[in-house]
Image (cartoon, rainbow, N blue to C red; front, side, top):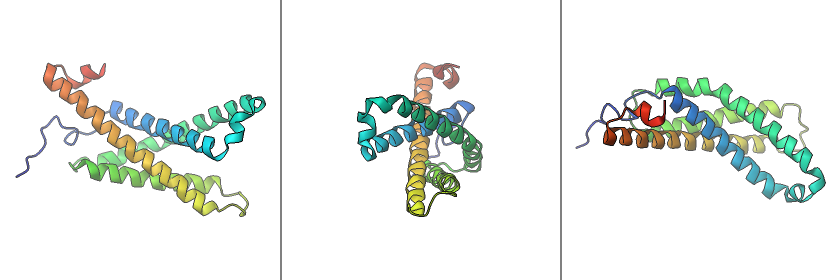
Length: 169
């Protein structure tokens, strides 16, 4: 016999602005870490040439700003998906749905960015890879947001302090 989650469960209440912000920033940070790791593995000589470091740094900063802007542009879609799933109590459904949202968004962005690229590169394969990375980052971030919210609410129950005060608001 299973019981319904308590009213304070993250499965029972919609994500707050803080939760959505945490989710969005976690998507971005995870994506940047994976992108930098890929860059180090795929182009190791670029990181060895000290003369190219200023250009490399500027490229990484520009890439990070663009990725952050695109992540924030996707945040309203994530909020809408979370709102649509507000009655679904199973976390894995949320994680999978957000993974699919990230996959679709990553696919759209990568195909749009590659629209003028020469066909010598396997654009569709790269778009699929990029979309899979975006989906994984989005699913992982949703899982992290659920875990941190659960932790915050457990501390709230244990101490008697509201979850918002535990989080520092």
